[in-house]
Image (cartoon, rainbow, N blue to C red; front, side):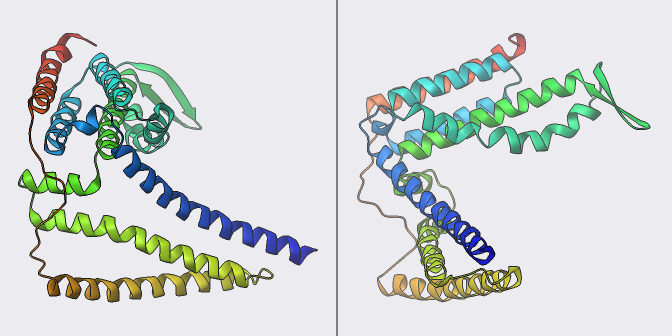
Length: 284
């Protein structure tokens, strides 16, 4: 019975890993499907969308007003609704991770920032005070990160990845950077699929738990095999690309053409970003 319980726990760990890998692939496929929806932002020229994203991120990063950041976020939610994105999926994808990681980065400023103290924490002989200015700075920082990540998610969900890369190339982003980004995105899913197959093969051979040492050995061997396979595949793929006349230029079947509506959306974003600068001086 004990061996059976161990086996069930071991198989549960494998199933959890397989489910995580499969979920990553499914989310990527779902993202591509959303980019093909007949929403408002999906119809905007990808080059205009990338430029709008950069302008909005700069505006959010330069803002020191919580009211301005909340107003920007409300605009983002309205654009997401107009683009027919699932509301709960969009919000959860942004805010489930931001408070944790952004909070870890900003926590020290709460205790060491200058200014009046809200209250003191007694940790034995040491007394640590929480600064009001530190708390306010932390709120502004998390809000900035939330707005910026929301903009990035909005761009990715409404634009096919190949069009994003082509837009970066059109905006004179270094060709090497675009190429590396393209290959990384393309082949990470291939290796996820390979890793999924390795987990499935492992699961099919598991009868009873062999122990933590054997598990660590298997993980080490799998990591080494996957790394060796990735090096070999990179050389093979590059040789195949050169044989087919690859010159480093990103090519897609899409033809970009800026329309009047695209210029209007870009201009509106620029005006909105410009308006945040004076508003941030008096709107808390």
